Length: 149
View 1 (cartoon, rainbow, N blue to C red):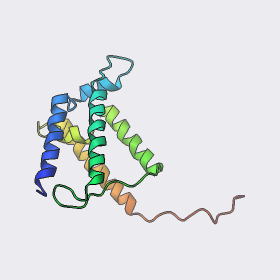
View 2 (cartoon, rainbow, N blue to C red):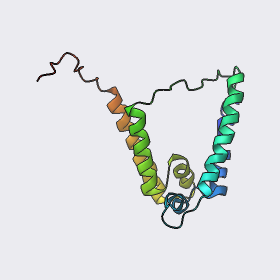
View 3 (tube, helix red, strand yellow):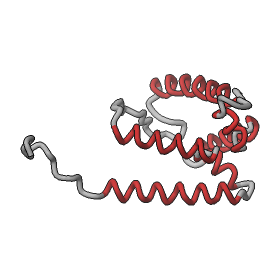
View 4 (cartoon, helix red, strand yellow):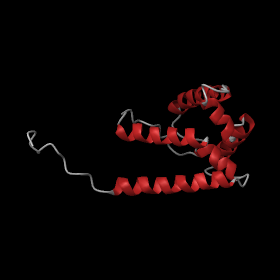
């Protein structure tokens, strides 16, 4: 069950992406084109995802363990900091430029899409850079520096 439930969840997610057409960058870009031929279908897909996640998080909060028997670890972070805003901005700009985000890009790998493969490769490189930057020592605090220069 440890490997079956994540596989089934991923398969269901991928099938949902295919059925909704969200694996097509043109469909996503049409949603983002508010001044042109706007396609609102992504808003309905997102709304459905939020509704399902809302119920799933409520159910998970009441359970002590997952279907695989592992403890449920719900997110606890609530801070809105520069790292969250910066990551969100990078994600949004990339999504707007290319029309892909990680889920649809990985689903497109199954269709042997070269653009999606390049996107996933760049995504992996970006994650590696992020991990490398996070491992660097923090800069010295500027609290002890005089204000008058």
